[in-house]
Each structure stands twice: as structure tokens, then as C-alpha cells.
Amino acid sequence: MTTSENILFLVLGWLLGLFSPIIYDEVKKRQHRKEIRVGILTELKELRYKLMGVVYLVSIRNGTYDRELLNWIKPIVEEYNGTHQKDNIYKSIKNHLTLTDEELSAISEKLKTESLRGLSVKKYELPFLDSKINYLTFFDESFQNKILEMRSQLSLLHEEVNQAHFYFEKTFDSSMSTENHRIIRENLEDSYKNIAKKARTIADRIGKVMNK
Image (cartoon, rainbow, N blue to C red; front, side, top):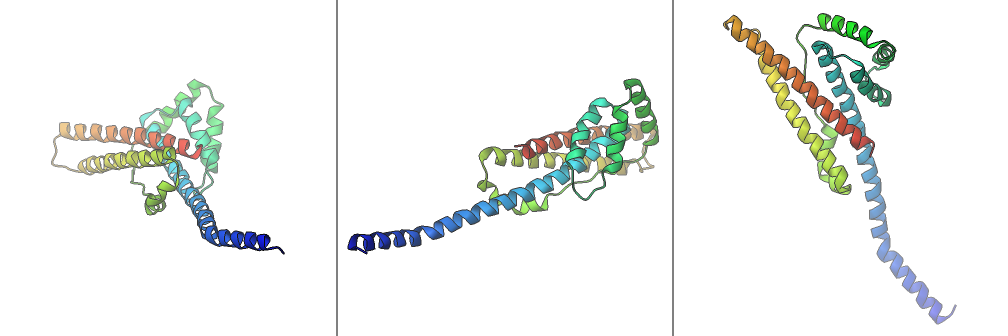
């Protein structure tokens, strides 16, 4: 081996030693980013399915169970592979989509009559996302913005849930006049509608994040 070859190997060895930690860190970073992304999307898909359920129940309560709603719900159920059982609702949706608008309207009225009771609404947390929020800088700006906007919308949903709980508790206040009791019930129904509207908005935003 010539002197120049020895020098070349020495330089290559030095460069390899210099850049190996950098390359290793970059590989680890990419792997970590992939794991975080999978975790976030899994959690968001679960949330999306739950929010779909809220929209579904409020629509039944309001008598707005129609073809447009079913076409919105169907792909969410199809894409869901989490822990919640989905076969019954998916089968029901497919069957109802084969009906005429008049038949769907009749079912909507029947379901509305059967659902006139208190509706349980809750807040939804994202523990994995919240624990990894500082790692969002690993991702491109578009992904970051969609996640942060979705979390902002979720906070607004929680405020509406607090309102619904307040009005629901007030419906048991026997000291109120009949008129005030009527107003409270109207406010409660409006809160349910607002919750469904915000839930659908968030579900749509999650869909955009998942399809990016």
C-alpha cells in the first residue's frame, strides 16, 4: 500500500468517525418521528370515531338523520380499526343508504321520538399528543398547524360541553318557573347542536391530517 493510499484511508477513517454519530442521530430522529406520527394518528383516528358518534346521536335527537349524514359517517366507520365495536352501525348505515329519502325521513322521525332523553356528552383528551407536543417541530409546518388548530377546536368543544352540563343540571331545578325551565331546555338543545357542529368540524380536520 502506498503512502498516498495510507493517507486516504486515514482520512476516510477520520471522516467516518466524525460523521457516524451525526448519521446515527439522524436515523434515530427519523425513527422517533415515525413512531410519534403513528401514535398521534392512531389517537386522532380514535377521537374521530368518537366525535362521529356524537354527531350521529345529536342528529338522531334533532331529526336530521339523513342521507348526507350517512354518507359522511360511512367512510369514518370504514377506516376505523380501533377497540370500539363498529359492525352494527356499519351494517345499519349500509342498509339505510339503500332506502328512499321518504323512507329515511320516516326512520328519522321514529328515531327522534325514541331519543328524547338526556344526552351524555363528554370531553375528549389526547394524552399521547399532549405528551409529545414539543416534538411537533419534527414535522413540517402544515402538519403542525393542522394539529394545533385541531387542538384549539377541541378546546372550544370542551367549553360547549361545560355549557351543556350546566343547562342539563338546571333542568332539575324545581324552583324555576315553567317559562325559565323552557328556556333552559332550549339552551340545552342549542348546546347539543353546537357540540355536534364542532365535533363534525374537528372530525373533518382529523380526516385532513390522516390523509396528508
